[in-house]
Length: 436
Image (tube, rainbow, N blue to C red):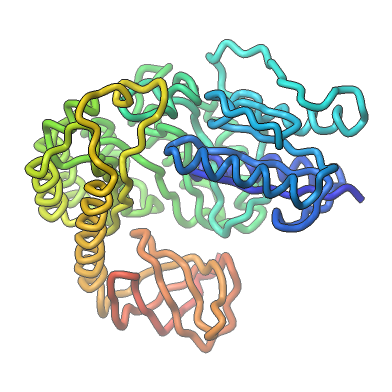
């Protein structure tokens, strides 16, 4: 039996696409083995969001070659789209060629396509690349990709270059995949993509189209929770809020991308909002939902960032009181406007600022978590830990450690009481399984 190994770097959309490829290979009779084992075929889904992601992509390709010098090694995704070529890989495929990877591998294994080939797929970038339903996934939450691409062209971001313009998936395809996931036992659906708040942009009503889609998904039997991927402040319109509030299955968790709490830095980043608008949006979310989880991404050390701008960003994050912050040090990406900006920040200064922001993130998370002590939360069980406890995430996307005498399985939806909390998450007990 031919063996195949997969490894994914980067975002949830990449992981979803790897699951789609995995389904194709396993359906064809391949046997999956870990990426650290010897395999006949290695599939690496690359990322280029930072320079470190590029370095890891090359590192994993060479690791695969050392494991089996005769293997067929495929590099695909954002890094290859933007020019990563490495002689450790036999085949390089870009972001719009991922769905062709299975076919290309089969041709190479049969000898009808020569190694070191670079495949060109006819694609004018205007259509969503439809994979079909991905009903067997590697996580206990079911991910559904609803769009690809981004039109924002933020000064620091290479993903727009790698993924191309916004392309929305047809609602019937999304609903069909969600039904297949529900039938496979998934009780939470996560809507993912590169810029999901642009879903429906081609139909002139982004935001509202996203919420209308979420409403349709809420009607699928077996689906108990619907979670949104990353959003931006300008997508949270009155129409969005009205539809969101009417959806009883929508998780009260909003990942609202910020990037900086300094208005001058936001301007240089080419973000299309300022902190005053961001604050208003958060206030509206908290008015419409009971203590929602508000999470975000923050970049420190953007070109020209001064000590005062860093202090302003810290102060704004403290004011908002995020439940979770993903902190990144700025990384120059070739082809972006920020890469050629003056006053690039010294790496040691970036490390210090990242540490400042991460410590604040921990304090804010602890405060948000501790507000829930004594309250009932729901979680989807993800796994059982060595000490016998169970882990998962609450509806507000807070990590949970659950002590329970009840025999639980990954994918179970349970209610539990928060007994204690810290920066790492919620410690719960008294689990009660919710029947499907």
